[in-house]
Image (cartoon, rainbow, N blue to C red; front, side, top):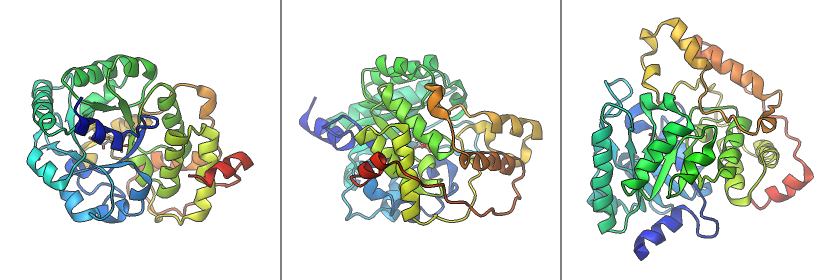
Length: 355
Ligand code: 5RP
């Protein structure tokens, strides 16, 4: 592998442990001003110093990311569809490699849609992008399983998608966590990082991270579970502690609770968790009530493994129930948010200082 390519990958997945925390803020490329990412600059600025790289589109990087701050940019270069359009899988390459170099991107990212109507196009796009990017030593991150394909989120499907991405030359693959995630990782010869998926209670999102790392993931490319939290900085710092300091779930959640005492609640807007990238969720007004309640029950990204780790504290429950209720009744009133009960364990508190 060329030195430049290796060097760029090492600034995303750190050379000491091969792991990385990528902050995903590219959602607007097909979701528009999605919840808590309405003003990207405000979302990104407080979080950027806690990530190893930032996944973003060229429009947001140019308008909303401080060029003086040295964060590696993983530039999303595919798109061309929207959440209200016909088919999310009909993407093309929309940003040239030349423009990515002008932006000083460290890596390029694009989606593939295995099993979807435009599977062929997206895979050929990946092959062509790798051909061009490698001329300049730019790594490519393939993003799998967004849109309708999201519903097939099991190890069989995700292994198929990730392996195909690697076979086409992707240098890193992003996918979703699932049961038997070890199978997805072991059958993919390049590093696999996980997306966070729809907003979960914080402890569940941290459990997802712990379980994915235990199964061999190289890190996270996480968005909504960080910036849709009422406590985005504590959340990214807790995720970081898992990825880079091997925190257990309890340690990470204790750190999160401790940090919640230090950082203000971002705002009092409740989370509605409506953007889960499934086209089946797009037109709220046209959807039968029955379908909506069914969908609000589906939490395909919820970690299934290591069940004992999934015990949630009482304070996580009301938030989850509230989300379901809000999903069915979009005209609800704002609810004041409670701070989590913060009683960090001494060991975790001592470690927290280093995070
Ligand atoms: C969508 C993406 C997102 O960046 C990705 O899904 C990560 O975000 P989240 O953690 O919110 O799922 O690539 O195509």
